[in-house]
Every structure is written in C-alpha cells, then in structure tokens.
Length: 237
Image 1 (cartoon, rainbow, N blue to C red):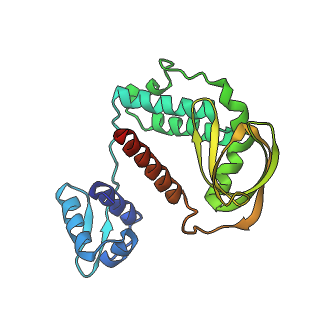
Image 2 (cartoon, rainbow, N blue to C red):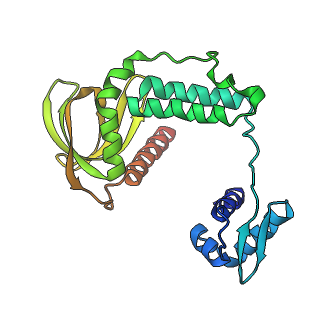
C-alpha cells in the first residue's frame, strides 16, 4: 500500500470518535506499530486533529473535511470516455454502475466544474458488441468472481456445436467482440471462447480452486514464452 493511501486509511479508521490503539490500526493495515506511529505523527504535523499518545490510543476530534477532488480537464474526459465505453460494450449492470460512478464524481467536484463530465465532446458508438455482451457478460463476471464452473453450448467458427464445461478465468473486449479465457475440461487445456458464439451458458454449483497449470497466470506465462520463442526464431532466420 502506498504511503498516501495508508495515511488516508488511518484517517478513515479513526473516524467515529472512538479510541483506537496503534496495534488495532497496524493490524487493519497490515503494517508495523512503528509505521503507524510515524504516519500519525506525519498527519498531526499537517494539521489533522488527532489526539492521543503512544501506548494509549488515538482518536480523531472534530470534523475533517477532505478537499474536493481536483481533476484536470483531460482526466475528466478520460473518465467520461471510459464510462461511455462501458455503456457501449458491457452488460446493463456494468453500464448502470459506470453512469452512477460519474454521478458520484460530479457531485464531489468543485461547484465551478460540476457538469463538465457530462459534456458530449467525446462519444463512443459500438453497437456490434451490445447484443453479445448483454447476453453473456454478466453471467461470466459472476462466475469469475465466485470461481464457479460453467457449462456452455458453443458453436465454433466451423459451425460445430459442442458442450463444454469450463473454469472461466478472464473476459476480454477486442473492439469487435468479447471473449472469455477459460480452462476447458473437455480439451484439458486453455481455450478462448467468443461470447457471441455461445448458444447457451449455465452457471454450475460446482466451484473450483486455483490449480497449478490451470490459472490465468499460467496461461499468460505460456503466451509470453510462445511469443519469446517466435521472436527468437525470427531473429535466427
């Protein structure tokens, strides 16, 4: 955790006017008590109203108002553009979450800058992704989050229809389609499935645990090794 993030978290822990020991704070942030002492001294030096002493505990007195978020114009445009990509490509739940995030950001901007994030200076038009994303994306996100297996009825590029039980590991947007990277139990190997070729997808009750050789990290390592081998082969040619 970065020091700036840690200082912010200490202030959050101390909110509520309840005495907190340095050990409690250290345990929550997974740092040493000595680090907590140094951080609290730094916060007090900058004017944060923390009262207490080492060996007894600390409490935040009064109301501490954090300054309004200070975004540059480019940062606001970047956030708005990112949210619009989500709205164009993702499922309704993610789209609504992206819009709500912009509402929250706009609400804490300085009054003189409120509304800037809604300007339509940069737009996203990508209707090709919406149908496939709405049909399968939310289910895949849930399966990855809960580490649950899925059963697919999948139509390949050659129009062959197969049934697959998979361990979903990641989902990827390519600008023209969504794909899911998974461990396929039928092939006993990693496979990538296009979401718009899935005829039916069901979330199974069976959960899975990360196993050596079957994780996303293993897949990414394989891709890296294959790319390195291709580069080496090309340089030797």
